[in-house]
Image 1 (cartoon, one colour):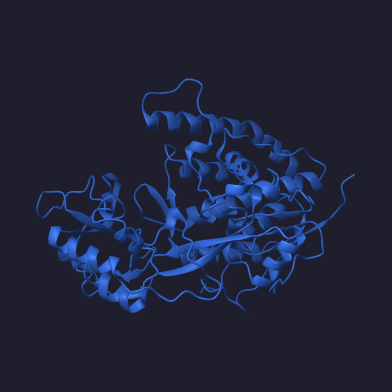
Image 2 (tube, rainbow, N blue to C red; image 1 turned 120 degrees about the vertical axis):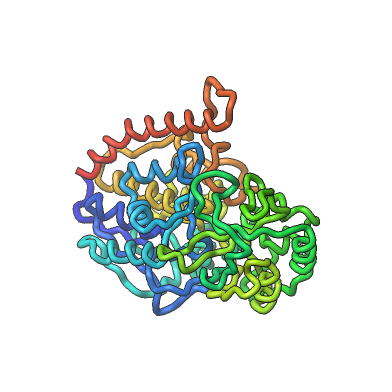
Length: 444
């Protein structure tokens, strides 16, 4: 018989931890949530609220023809707190779901603090708490002391680290709109992006200066590993003269209304808050010094007088060797009452972290309440992520964003990629709907 009123400890109030705490509480369990902010901040965090977005304010593609869009819809159907707050605080971003990061964080924080079953304790956790069950969701900047405790728990299994990056943000009224124009991203969606065109000469000078820009000095806890999905823009510039034009400065699908032609290269800015007073430079994660960022990015014609409200920063990302250490429910193989969620497990990205927190929590709640688990397979995005981090080669494990490549293939392949993706999404959502009744029964 399940123990009544059992308490679960959650460490970390980021996206994964907040989602996990919410799902556990909604399932009738008491939750003690530890969060060290605002008493102590990590090197990358600046805001007191829960679920702070450090890099982009975009949760990526919204349509079901994209894997991120599918994952978000799956989360919605499981009653995700993070998705509810994201939908309520979204800002225009064409085919993507982007949010006002302050309102988003505030919405999460208010929901968590006002839940009668969640107790929030402001304190840094230095080691894995002795109370069980516990979910560790301390994110990519887990403190050295807790990281050492995790290593000891896993009998000396080494953790890994790599860099993640945040792009600069500029004030809208400092952008020279006579040298920029609104358009969609790559000709898809609505005209929500500010496009800053560059001709051949402007681009050539910019690329050379960027490739030779002065880098910020690495801190003691950082090394030179770079996550390929978040490569600094100056690293791209060094890889070849045209690398940027096939990456973040790609002009495909964009026509400058002033010339009626496609620009040689184009820098895109995406709205960062609801009011549209702030815009981030898409794909411009960087490890340049602040002075170099101001000098080089101001060479973009539309940004010659840009006022930067935040410069790009780089920070460490730590994750465990999950294929060896975790099962598909994010439980440690050593002790199933010690679970992990979020980027520390090797899921990469905002919604991926949210999905891991949700999936770990609803299945832990089911186990504690004596109910059947929600066992999602790789026909679903949530299930595919859990299987990715818990399977495969432990010797070559790398973080992963959600993508259709890790979701089961179709028996009958469509000719067009978009049609195949939509059919995969439809199959996934049908699976989710069949299993959601089980989740609802668990919470009743």
